[in-house]
Amino acid sequence: MLRDVVHRTDPELAALLDLEDQRQRDKLRLIPSENYTSQAVLQTLSSALSNKYSEGYPGKRYYEGQQYIDAIEQLCIARAKSLFGAEHANVQPYSGSPANLAVYLAFCKPGDVIMGLGLPAGGHLTHGWNVSITGKYFTSVAYGVRKETGRVDLNEVEALAKKHTPKILFCGGTAVPRTIDFAGFAQIARSVGAVLVADIAHIAGLVAGGAHPSPVGHAEVITTTTHKTLRGPRGGMILCNANHAQALDRAVFPGLQGGPHNATVAALAVALKEAQSEDFRRYAHQIVRNSRALAEALLARGYDLVSGGTDNHLILIDLSNKEIPGKRAAQALDRAGIETNYNSVPFDPRKPFDPSGLRIGTPGMTSRGMTESEMPQVAAWIDRAIAAEKRGDAQQLSTIAAEVRELLLRFPAPGL
Ligand code: DSN
Image 1 (cartoon, helix red, strand yellow):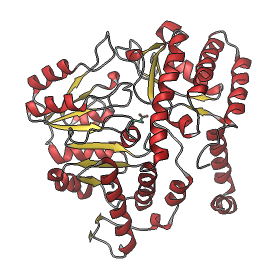
Image 2 (spheres, rainbow, N blue to C red; image 1 turned 30 degrees about the vertical axis):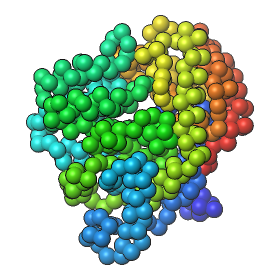
Image 3 (cartoon, rainbow, N blue to C red; image 1 turned 180 degrees about the vertical axis):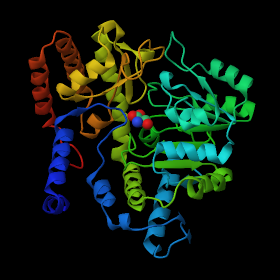
Image 4 (cartoon, rainbow, N blue to C red; image 1 turned 180 degrees about the horizontal axis):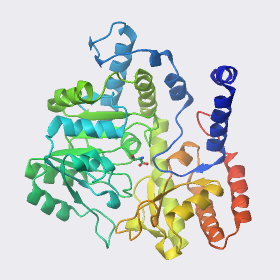
């Protein structure tokens, strides 16, 4: 119905929207930060809330007409607090990066020392990497992963923290295939007087569904996006202990942002309700089972996985031993109907725009209902596509894309 209206108003744009829907239906979407939101979330995003300005917080706005907006934001906050067991929630950050910037603004002055996982080791740009404002305006110290294990070594983190005494210590990242030891990080942060910030953007849905330990009770501040494993709209959220509520709220507004995106806040409220369900718990645990099954199938085919496997939704493949760079592999896989992203691996000798790795994950396909039974087939397609690309067999890539489409007919894409 809504799309019909767009077709009448702007057929050129509507045709592109239709094509993107079709692409998301037909492709095996393995990018670990992507997912399929529900129809309820998508419909809420396109509501009249998009017409409204609401600078401020419920009960303290700078614009009138907030009777329903206040109720919506309060509902969203209450659901976020209850789902994660947090004392305070701010649901206004536009996404994960602004949520992280708010943390800097709340706790640091320019030039202060901060610590986070380095980008090449799986950290996020906003954890202090040098090309980000967070690496330019603050004195950033990066910890890494051990070459032999591909895992964070808390002894290294502790030694660096003791030497540099950061104001804030980030844990979490964008290419971390293993469980994050929040308690271990908390002990280090406490010992040097740093605020521990757990960036759970990737794993928020796993935490909510009980498939990854929760940082609540360990990290004083938790930041997240809302659209990855959590399966909500594109957005961000900050959870924290009550004593940090005022500083973080002020940092988000008026420190960094103007009016919240009300339709996004409302859609997040819907997603948080969905995340309270038993279905969501099953989905979260299935993501991990699928990921482990896929990792095993890839290992059996000789793929080198960073850290040797996975505990969560994400698998980082080092393609060096397959003698194909990540970008070429990802482009070939896309032609074979399998969507991934190329990614640096720890200690990567190649450049970030043409790295050695491929990052894949199971949230999207789990949302479509796939289970462990499909994972050997997925690994076989990846392997066949990479071999086909190496011998220049474009026909084989098209054949795989057709097989992928055929399988996906059995697993309808939610929301589309
Ligand atoms: N772009 C996100 C991801 O793909 O992990 C991180 O910001």
